[in-house]
Amino acid sequence: MALSAGPEKQVGKLVIRNIGLLLTGDLGAPLLDADTIVAEGGRITAIGRAADCDLSEAHVTVDAQGCALSPGLIDSHVHPVFGDWSPRQGQLGWIESSLHGGVTTMISAGEVHLPGRPRDIVGLKALAITAQRSFANFRPAGVKVLAGAPLIEQGMVESDFAELAAAGVGLLGEVGLGSVKAGYEAKEMVAWARKYGIQSTIHTGGPSVPGSGYIDADTVLEADADIIGHINGGHTALPLRQIRCLCEGCLRGIEIVHNGNELAGLTALRYAAELNQLPRVILGTDGPAGSGAQPLGILRTIALLSSLGDMPAETIFCCATGNTARMRKLDCGLIEIGRAADFMLMDRAQHSSGSDLLDSVRKGDLPGVGMVVIDGIVRCGRSRNTPPAERIPVIV
Picture (cartoon, rainbow, N blue to C red):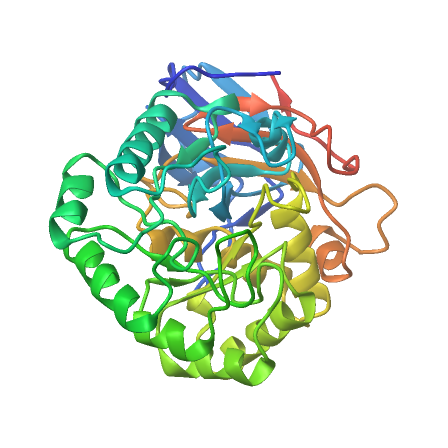
C-alpha cells in the first residue's frame, strides 16, 4: 500500500504529452484542443500543443499515448475517521483504493463513524480540530482529504464557530446527524458558520445512522446550508416533488451521491438541467457507510448519470471536478494555469461497445484508469480497480 506522510513537493518539471482528449472540468468549455500539460511546483504552468510548450529539462515526462486527461476527481461527500481506516466496515486502505478510481481530493461530511464519537461541545470541537490537523499532515497515497467537520449539537453558541474557524476548521458535518434537526435551530448555526468562513452541508432524506433523523425539503430550505447533501438520499430519498422543490427553491449545491437512490439522483439531474442549474450539481459517494466503501463510486456515478440521464459524458465529468472545485472553493478540479496539477489519465475499457472514451461512458461503461497525478507527482499507474484500458500512459 502506498502511503504519503504529509504533502510532498513536486521535484522539477512534469511534462505530459501526446494527450488524445483533454477534459477541462469547465462546463462552459468541457473539451480543450491541446495535447500537452506542464507542471512545476505542483501547479499547472502550461497547456497547449507540444510545439508551443517548453518541454526542456523535464524531471518526469509522461507519454499519454493518446489517452484522455481530466482533472482528478473530487469526492464531495466522505466520512473518514483517522488515516486510511474505516471502523464502519473494519476496512483498511479505502482512500488509497479510491485513488485507483481517479479520486484525488475528498471532502468530509463529518467524522461520524468514530467509535465513541464525542457529542459534548468541548469534545466535538476537539475531534474536529484533531481530524483537520491529522489529514493536513498525512495524505494516504497522496490523496487530499479535507477533514475536520463537526456535527453540530444543541447548546453551541456563536463563539464556538469562531473558535473552530480560528483553529483552521472550514467545514461542518452533515446538519441533522447531531441533535440539531429543526430548521430554525440549524439556520442560526449555519449562519454563524458562514459568518466565519465555515461551509455547511445538510443531511437530506431518511435517517442513515442511529441518531440521525428525517430531513425534509422544508427543513433543508429553512436551514439554508451551502450544500444539499445527498439530495438523492443517503440512502432513503425524499419524494421526487420535494427534490424538485429543492432544485427550484434555492441556489445551493445539489449533491448526488453513489450511495443513494439512483432514480432520485437521475431525477435531480434532470430537474437541474431543465432549470439551467447544472453548475450546482456536484458528486460524492457518501462512503464509507453501511454499504461499504466504493473505490469506483465517482466513476460509477458519472457513468450512471451520463448513460441513463442522457447527458454528454464530458458534462458529467465537470460535475465531479470543476463544479465541485468552484462550489467548495478549491484550487484543483480545473485544467487552468495556476491550478493544482491533479490529473486522471484514462481510456476506453477494452472491449467496450463505445466508439471512444466518451461514447463508452455514455453507454454506461467505466473507463480504464491508466495513471493518477496529484500535485504534479505520479501517484499510481494502471488502476487495479477499473477495467483494463485499451491504452495506458507510460513514463519515458
